[in-house]
Length: 116
Image 1: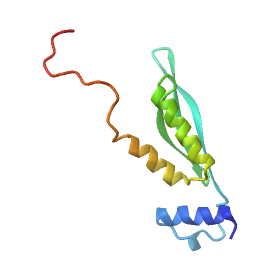
Image 2 (image 1 turned 180 degrees about the vertical axis):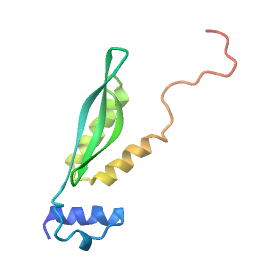
Image 3 (image 1 turned 90 degrees about the vertical axis):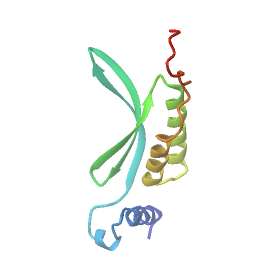
């Protein structure tokens, strides 16, 4: 088994699909990358980063953050490093989902604050 097929087999096993069920299918590899994309709102373009990966011909993606955010830039570097280190898409997706539960770096306003 080639290294790519071996990684794919591990990835499919984690998804609950057996490697044997893919014999003869056109599943050759899983590719993944970080892309910059924009959304148009009220005539303005807002730029964001997202992690993308393909399984077969289906493109999946996870939001990373705004290109103006220092935190999102740091997360983008972490994802690109994980890709370069050979991490599987399912592992990187778990990493990104884990960031959702991190505490915010923004200071919280005390309740009933009338000084603003």
